[in-house]
Length: 269
Ligand SMILES: [Zn+2]
Image (cartoon, rainbow, N blue to C red; front, side):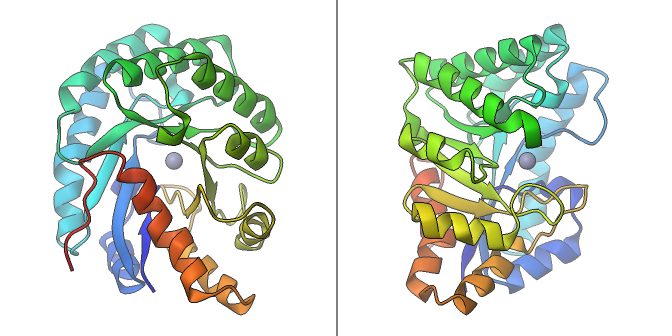
């Protein structure tokens, strides 16, 4: 089996996780900028984090032969402080030329608040001005449908943004159609306690197909499973999905989406 982990918060994982992932067939990992589990006290904390994502973590991943890519932003959970968000967003352009940066993410909404909307629009403008791809986080549970609609409206109303260069992550049964119908890519997050279980994710693929869709573990510092993608692939095999269809979903699709950024390159085997 071969697969890409298109959404893993590797700075909070151990070297054992890297070994397990590579052993299971992981061929590249992509790490969107995220909440640290606590609020950072200043823009300097984000500066250090962006250095970690663009310089240090790629070196750690390389020790296990794993190409590491990243996306930069201030996450929606820390977007209530608009002044802090402005300061952080002003730091990002100087990191955009770094070799492993694919775009702006994971941006989006958490509680669908007015300030979060403001910061989302600032990020979308930053991406548009710098011709960057976008990775979007959608809110949890009861806020998800409304939040997804709000995010899609922001993206669709900016004529500079091409839907095929944006992925809307953490889709579930009630949001996936909205995302795909509007021409965006959809990400399904495999979590043990919230978001999609493997069984639900496979149901979604069986209903909506495997064209503009990928799966990720979104493994982070919380309860999450770094091997959720290969585990789900095994589950798909048990359900009778062909090796080819599985390979498309977990390997070829992430490559197809991310290759829209010329910096995304898989090593030649
Ligand atoms: Zn994430």
